[in-house]
Amino acid sequence: MNLVLEVWRQKNSKAQGNFETHNVADISPDMSFLEMFDVLNEDLINEGKEPIAFDHDCREGICGMCSMYINGRPHGPSRGITTCQLHMRSFKDGDTIVVEPWRSGAFPVIKDLVVDRSAFDRIISAGGYISANTGNAQDANSILIGKDIADEAFESAACIGCGACVAACPNGSAMLFTSAKVHQLNVLPQGQPERNARTRNMVEQMDREGFGGCSNIGACEWECPKFISLDNIAALNADYLKASLVKD
Ligand code: SF4
Ligand code: FES
Image (tube, rainbow, N blue to C red; front, side, top):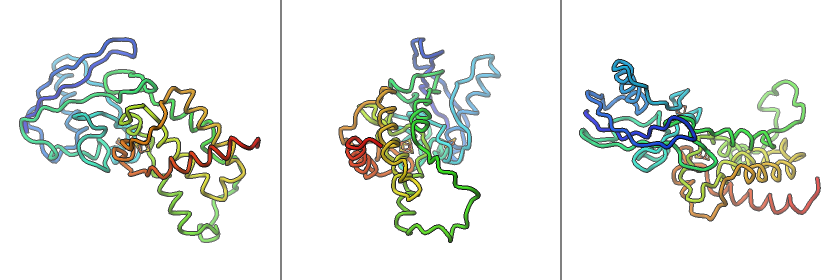
């Protein structure tokens, strides 16, 4: 496949960015989107030019690092996958592909396609844990948690912190991420002692980071590679209301 890439280049968060046009040739349809970028970067290095900075780590849909807007969609045109799981067969020979970083005030661009998502880390630090000493790992069969609750917690815990929900939201809201990280603990017995403080602290940290409010548009759920449900947001709203009425 031969493709034309329109890629966002930006030296740092203060610099003004711009699109740069690159032609890539002889791309296999079986390559992943990131492997196609590897080929382009090798060409740029061989030509003595600066390679394009992009985030990646696991390359198997687990770490949430490979965050890019591809043709106007976070993680590209297919639902339920991350950029590293996107294959070039999703495009046609001769296509022009536009690649941009996440666009959100709370995720400043560090360089090219790499954005600073440390705001997510600070939301987790505000309460996304349990502080009870749990000792050694118990045998799973000795923990009396019903399957429906375990499944619900597991579905929320599938969030990989990629930030596509924020990028997709016209308000730049982080409610889907925050609600999943709150709910995965609030639904379990181990999460009950700190439930109210966790809910208040994580929501308030989210607001301090400058994310926008949720107006129930649902783009976050649609673009989430892990199908995190809007039900998490409904649960967080109910939990936050209760938590704001008590002092613990
Ligand atoms: S909720 Fe979905 S889109 Fe948002 S950070 Fe988690 S995995 Fe990514
Ligand atoms: S590189 Fe880890 S999810 Fe894509």
